[in-house]
View 1 (cartoon, rainbow, N blue to C red):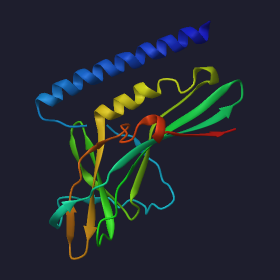
View 2 (cartoon, rainbow, N blue to C red):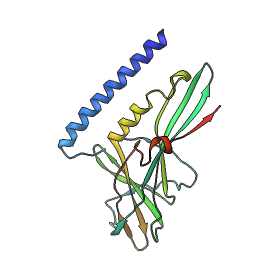
View 3 (cartoon, helix red, strand yellow):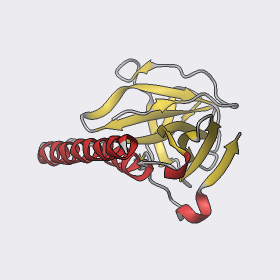
View 4 (cartoon, rainbow, N blue to C red):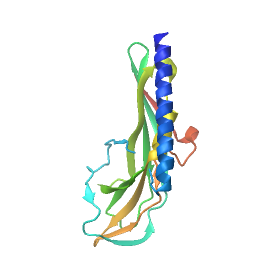
Length: 194
């Protein structure tokens, strides 16, 4: 019975957080604000991100922008003792190769505006943890959709190609973290790690 009360309290708290977040978004949208932060997760193919200050040595911008953006979600579930599970949902953004691209730069777009730091990588996919929790196995991925909804509202990424001779492509459209470009039933992969 205590677990039921605890779960109910947690759900109520998450609902309040979501409500305050939505109110905050509405207030900022009047001022022209945009999308919070999730943790970046290293994965094979990543070059350690290089934080570059956008204001120094402005490159020449060329057309077109990076295209073919596809975002997907994947879940990883680990079974724990006492009928518990630990789960994580990862959001991955991939794009088509850009002609003559040496690397790619990603920029977080937050509620407060665009981040002044860029993340540089050679891989054409970017992956971050978008949601996680530890709960009773019978509860499944508890509050997953609510956590993903909060990220969709608060955080997005855009990408551009880095070319030779201090040139870059135009920025791609902003993709919301937690949103997918393919239907979730086809795009979500679930892996169980006992």
